[in-house]
Length: 225
Image 1: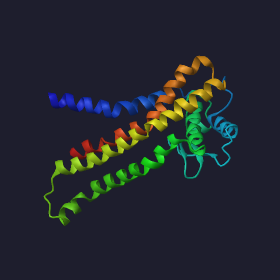
Image 2: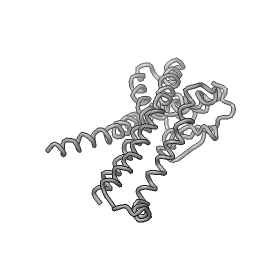
Image 3: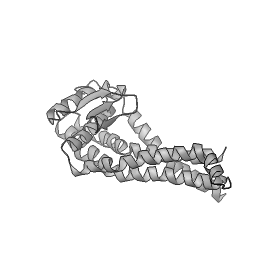
Image 4: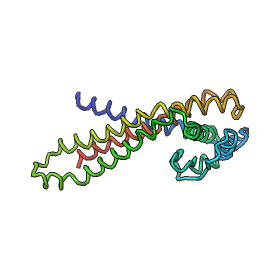
């Protein structure tokens, strides 16, 4: 019985944040005629307003909104780029917030350049261990132990989560030190919508942590094989 309770709690902790992020972004994604423009138009306007001369705004796949600091590009999914909703406006402002921090060379922007390569490395290690463990055990003459395999892969997945947690202050900065003041003080949204926008910006800040937590679930899937 305790094992069942532990598994349920673990699933809630792993799946809950991602489910909340998706629910929040979806909840406020309905187009609003009272907003002055789309997310893409706001992003383009803010790039000009803050004189981010090297930054461009481009489309990307749905759900892959991000600021590419290597290419100096704010990439927005179609629903954000062309959407006239609170979610579109808030997400666009969040990504431009990243652009402001990077282009102005603010210290907070160093977190992603320092830790994101570790996240990518952890993901590659995890994939390699998952696919290559039988060959590794054969080469090293080790007994093929399912619990040991799951433990190693699980630790790699948790490393990816920890890296995303380390970057969380930068995400928080983009949401609440950049996007929220810009939207509130610039009258880009009605003042009564600020509480909703705060929820959306919280979801924006938690997106990568939530996604990393979900990836830890592959250990459980592997156990069931």
